[in-house]
Each structure stands twice: as structure tokens, then as C-alpha cells.
Length: 395
Ligand SMILES: Cc1cc2nc3c(=O)[nH]c(=O)nc-3n(C[C@H](O)[C@H](O)[C@H](O)COP(=O)(O)OP(=O)(O)OC[C@H]3O[C@@H](n4cnc5c(N)ncnc54)[C@H](O)[C@@H]3O)c2cc1C
Image (tube, rainbow, N blue to C red; front, side, top):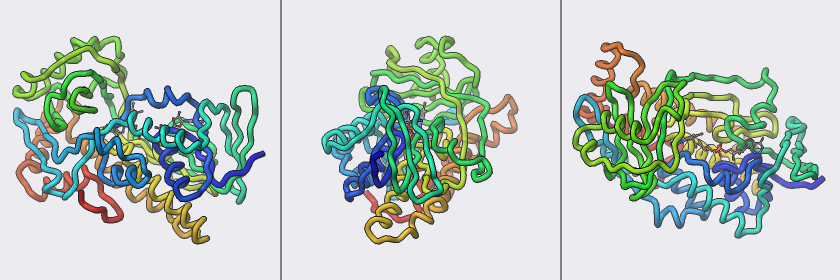
């Protein structure tokens, strides 16, 4: 049996970022990831970062490429009722957002680990957690045909929504809150220039649409679709036609289309598990919470958890205090619930729920309030750029 200070389950963005931050401060970690590095890096997911996430990646020493290649966005567009309105995030909040794909963050983190010679165990199978309530919990796993056992001080469950960590907590000690939204998103990735310089969120009578991007030559577009829809119903031409139909004329006319390089349907779910600590096990990121992607909060919440947990673990090793670790769950959940509320609200504001005209008119009235009222715009912008529990430096 080997010994380590912190065992991290899951080599997604939370797991690798936590490991990187701890390693820089002299804490020994092992990361157990069930897939190959190539598989994890190939998953097309988030791409819009709050500035607090940008700061954290820079503090972790993995931000150089992001600062060179990422696109800072100072605003976004809301399209509704035949018009568009730009929300100037920067003037309203002092903060911008950064467009930089999760795939690239994943590569930057994995490169940093590889360069340091640190040990990420890719293709770790049968990962299991033991003795979470003792001061020396254990993690077992298989690599190839060999069984391994690791004793540690802490376990970080960074293994996403379908991981083993949350499942290891006895049901009577965890409360699960969940709402499944009655529609999904079909997303397409294509090597075409984005239709506009900033993101466009569209409330349309045919359904929601989002124009996003990963770079100046790679676009990411989404359409609201039925929950039980099948990808085979969406050849590229149908997707582009439907997107054009939902966009305001000035953008529809300028839309450049091309072959998709990725296409997928994702359900929209709100989910929170609390508390986020059980004994020596700490849940991090998607293992503890999922938000619908409308507010682009999933990856940013994961990074915020990592910041709070890394501070707690470092305080324990450097000053012998467990105060911050004891506060981890409450601190993380405060932010999680604010982001869950915003993501739910922004989803209800922009998506089509029924044919009911009353509900649609209420949406338009609320969007109009954001467009016309300084207070409405500021409340929206503050939530969009991320409500932090601690002040951040303005960019
Ligand atoms: C299809 C999709 C689209 C998304 N789009 C957006 C978006 O546009 N904007 C946004 O902000 N967020 C988006 N998200 C959410 C965002 O990607 C997540 O919030 C983010 O990936 C969370 O990171 P994580 O490290 O906590 O979890 P994950 O990225 O899920 O990483 C968990 C890791 O744990 C590994 N793992 C799981 N079980 C085990 C096990 N038993 N043993 C070992 N390893 C295990 C997994 O292989 C995975 O690598 C999207 C998510 C999905 C699924």
C-alpha cells in the first residue's frame, strides 16, 4: 500500500486544477482518471470563463496560452421580440468574460502535470473509496491487471455527475435537489467564423438559440430541442436553417455555415447535492452540482470549488488548522445556490416552455426591463460575470 497526502478521483478540469494548485505548494497528490488523456481532452464542453476562473488558472501557472489565444468579451447580445440589445458587462460590473475552450484548459493542465513528472493515473479502473470517516481513508483501483491501494489524508471527489465519490456517501447523510428541464440543447461545433463578435442569446417563438464560439474561426451554436430528440433528426442543413430562422435578420443574413465537426444533444438539468463534505471526502464540481448551461456556470463553479478546497487543504498542511476545511461545504454551497438560481432563471427567461402566450409576454417584459433599466441590466450582468464571495481584482 502506498501513502499520499491527497487522493483525487477524476482527471477532468477540477481534478487536474486542484492537483496543480496543491502540487505548486508542496502537497503530494495522486489523480485517478478512468479514461485516457486523449478521451478526456476530446470532450467538447464549456468555453466561457468568468474572470475569477481566469485568475485561478493564472495562479496555477497554466494560463499563458489562454491569455495569448483566449478572447476577452466585454459584453453580450440579447435578441428578443425582433430586436437586439447589447449588455455591456464591463461597464456594468468592471469585469469581462474569457472565451477559451474546456478542451484547451484540459490540455494545458495535462501538459503541466506531464512536465512536472507528476503522476496522473489514466485508465484507472474500479476506483473505490474506503474508510471515509477515519483519519486515514483509502482508495483502491486497478490499472491493467494490477490492483493498487493508496492511503491518504483527504479524498477529493472530482469525478463528475456519474462518478463514484457521491455514490460512496450513505444516502441518509446527503440531500439531493434536482430539477430536469423539459427540453434539451442540440449543439454544433464548426470551423466557421462566428456570426458576431460576442455571444448572442435568442428568445424566439420557435425556441431558444445561442451563438457562441471557441475562437475567431470556430463557432459553437445551440438550439433548444425536445428532450427526446435524436441526433439523426438533425442533419447539418436542418440545423443551420433552424438557427437562421431563430436569429434576428441582421445576423441571419451574415451567418456562415459549414460542416459540423461535433454535434450532440444534452439534457438541461439543475442538481445540487449537500453537504459537499462527508468525513475526509470532499465533493468538487459536477460531482456535487450541475446547472443548465444557459448561464455558462458549470465549469466556473467547479473552479470556484477548487479554489475554496485548495485553500482549506493548504491551511491544514501549512498552519495545522482545519477551520477552512470545516467551512468548505458552506462556502462552496453559498455560491453554488446563487449560480443555480441564476442559471434556472436565465433558462426560464429565454426558453420556450409552452404555446401559452401569457408566459411568452412575461419573458419579453422581463427582457425589456433588462434592456431599459440600469438596475435590471446591472443585476443580470453581476450574476452573469459571477457573484463572488471574495472581491476580485478588476481586469
Ligand atoms: C455535454 C456537456 C456540455 C457542457 N457545456 C457547458 C458549457 O457550455 N458551459 C459550462 O460552463 N459548462 C458546460 N458543461 C459543464 C462543464 O463541462 C462541467 O461543469 C465541467 O466539466 C466540470 O468539471 P469536473 O472536473 O467537475 O467534472 P468532469 O469534467 O465531468 O470530470 C470528471 C472526470 O472524472 C472522471 N471519472 C468519472 N468517474 C470516475 C471513476 N469512477 N473513476 C475515475 N475517474 C472517473 C471522468 O472520466 C472525468 O474525466 C457541459 C457539460 C457537458 C457534459
